[in-house]
Length: 238
Ligand code: ATP
Image 1 (cartoon, rainbow, N blue to C red):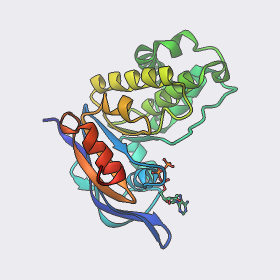
Image 2: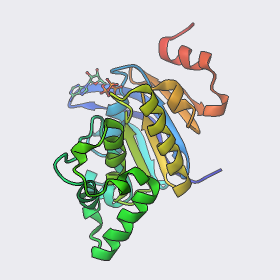
Image 3: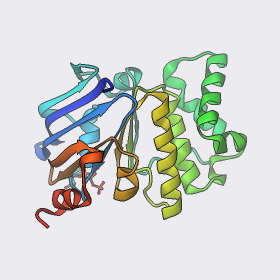
Image 4: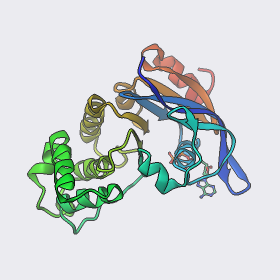
């Protein structure tokens, strides 16, 4: 089995005095995809915000590469944790290439280093390469989502966190975005994917975790999780 990158155990977090995540546990391994599911308001984004350092952990633990995470959010990016927030917008008036270059700023690369990183992204997402000189606004919603992911990849993450990349996309595009995310596994990074598109995301997952009202109600290998298990975890007994 691959190395454990991220281990969230009995996490408790929220906003100020308000606790919204009470007991969430999940694991992400290198070269694998963990999908985090749950109804609107279940606490998925709040869980991600605790992992990336935007919300305070008030109980349980978040470990990265075997040690508890305590760095400020920008230091977590430098340590290999990239986060594409829900509804992330690209810079519409800048070209695709300029958007990617902005994503690489945290790494202080030279001109040549930046160019080779941009080329790596074009290999992963050829559509971005073919439109490199066009404004990001000229691309479809699905392509802009791929650009947002490409921008995050420019920071060379070990762990990529994606919050609902399929939001607002037509079903056929959702499938395509999921395929591209699936292909990223081959680069060896670990991916934590929050999704509402249950079937499409479970189809590419190695691990699945479901949360309901701030608690994990199901966690395990995707291959062992049935549709009935998912329904039970989402809605209680079926
Ligand atoms: P969605 O799919 O709608 O994004 P989610 O599972 O990601 O849902 P969260 O965004 O984590 O859910 O929200 C969990 C709970 O925390 C909700 O009850 C929400 O109202 C509350 N919440 C979210 N953001 C804040 C905030 N900034 N301040 C206070 N409460 C918040």
